[in-house]
Image 1 (cartoon, rainbow, N blue to C red):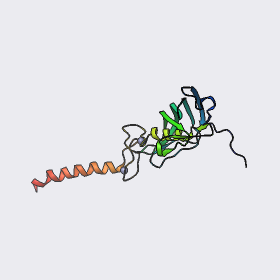
Image 2: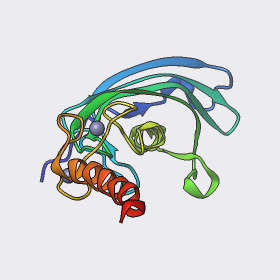
Image 3: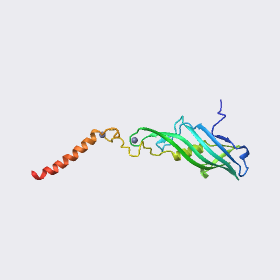
Image 4: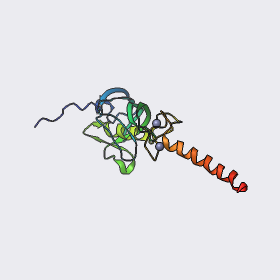
Length: 177
Ligand SMILES: [Zn+2]
Ligand SMILES: [Zn+2]
């Protein structure tokens, strides 16, 4: 069974390991694969190239990773369901250390290596639009007939207008009875 030997988010620490104050720039461009969170109505599409531009700096007991994570995102407008996409860039400043993990808000270092994938995914989920809109004044779909009100007023709105005028006619008509 073949194992993936080169994970593009894997970083060998080499001289950074246990060497206080040593810094190294890492620029990685790779596909994360589709990243979806149940709490967010946008996602990182499968084919998107994620750019990780960070500086690694060794300190006593760990490595600080600081910089930016960028990706294209896509989703559906919350109001009209039109397909939309955009770019997101998220600033990161995280600590990797042996034995690190989510309980202490850090990421692990194993065998002199760290893997940026989990940090990248967390950062993008923090930066993706939670409730994306195609435009801030999107009129959305009619809740009754489903028509896209950005393109055309539907019959339902017509009926509401007619109802209002009918009410006014009733009001005006009443005293003359
Ligand atoms: Zn919309
Ligand atoms: Zn309608």
